[in-house]
Length: 86
Image 1 (tube, helix red, strand yellow):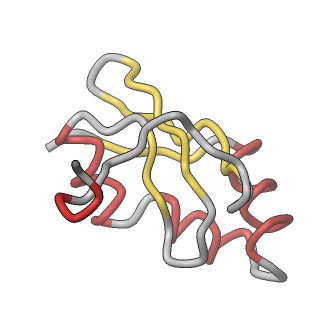
Image 2 (image 1 turned 180 degrees about the vertical axis):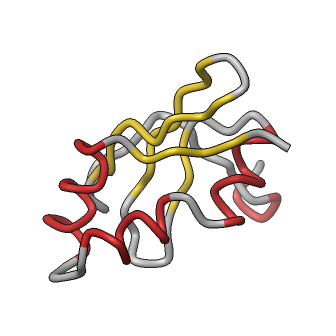
């Protein structure tokens, strides 16, 4: 199981984009087991429940949460449902 750390930049962006939360709460969200599981799976982005997207970068055995993108920002990774296929 790899380790996940949140950069200072990502913590500040989470606080800015997710509303008023403490640094500790922001870090707890950004390094949660769900983020860790997504990193183990190889995800580069994780969409949070509030719509923000977390950008991940693998750095050896550690995954770094690099930034938090606003909900209106698209990452280019879209999963289409079967109902949308022709």
